[in-house]
Length: 59
Image (cartoon, rainbow, N blue to C red; front, side, top):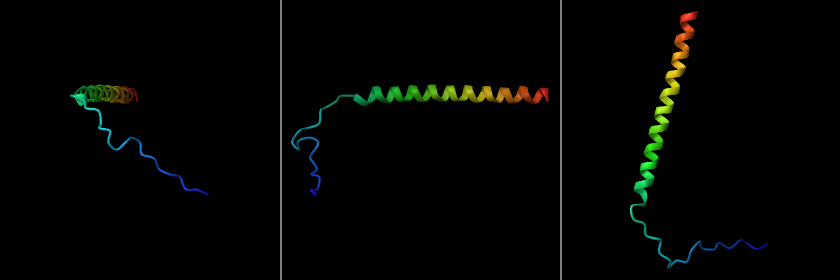
């Protein structure tokens, strides 16, 4: 059998495309997503705690 030959993904002389402030918008989107997840998690935890509080009062 013949062994597989690895081919380069791109020519060695090709430069990477230059970007200007490409990460700022991505970082902002990640920050907003983290904030939304934190608020939703705390709201869900508060709702669960409320259910436990209501359940303990009836028992």
